[in-house]
Image 1 (cartoon, rainbow, N blue to C red):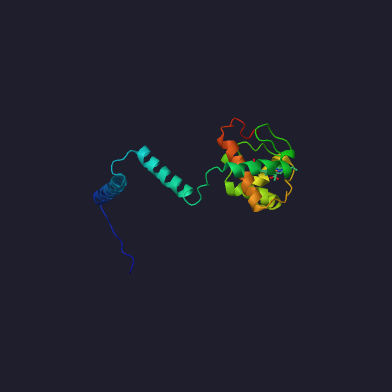
Image 2: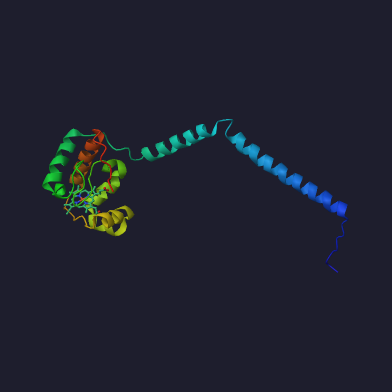
Length: 173
Ligand code: HEC
C-alpha cells in the first residue's frame, strides 16, 4: 500500500535527532551573523541614533514652519483679544474655561492648532485630542469666525510666546 512503514532502530533515531538540532543551531548562527553584518560593527546606540536622525529629517523637511515673523505675531496678539480668545484662554497664567495656551505649539502640531481655531466644532466631534480636551474642560470651544489668515497670525503669536522660553506652564492636568 502507499503507507510506508519506516522502521528505524533506536540508534538511527538518535542520529537523526542530532543532525536536526545541529542544522537548527547552524541556521540560528547564520541569521545572527547576517544581522551583525548589516550594521557593520556599529554599536546598537549608533544605529538607533542614525535611525532617529533619519526620521527627524523626514518629519521636518516637508513642513518646516517658517521663521517667526514679528509683525504677524503682533497681529496675532491683537487678534486673540479682539476675537475673544482671552476670555477663555491665558498664555502662561493657568486654565480658565479653556486650556492654558502656553506651550501649545510644542504639544500640538501647528496644523492641528489651525484646525482647532478654524473648526473647533468639527474637531471636538472627530479629533481624539480635542475629544479628550472636551472631556477635561467640559465646554466646547465656539467657532470664533477666524479667517485662515487670522489663524496664521494667532499661531505665529503662540509660537513666538513659546519660543521666548515662557515655559514651565505645561498642561497642568
Ligand atoms: C468660550 C470659551 C473659548 C473661547 C472664546 C475660545 N476657546 Fe479655545 N478652547 C476652549 C475650550 C473649552 C477648549 C478645549 C475643549 C475643546 O477643544 O473644545 C479650547 C481649546 C483650544 C485649543 C487647544 C488647546 C490645547 O491645549 O491643545 C486652542 C489652540 C485654542 N482653544 C485656541 C483658541 C483661540 C485662538 C481662540 C480665539 C480665536 C479660542 N481658542 C477661543 C474654549 C474657548
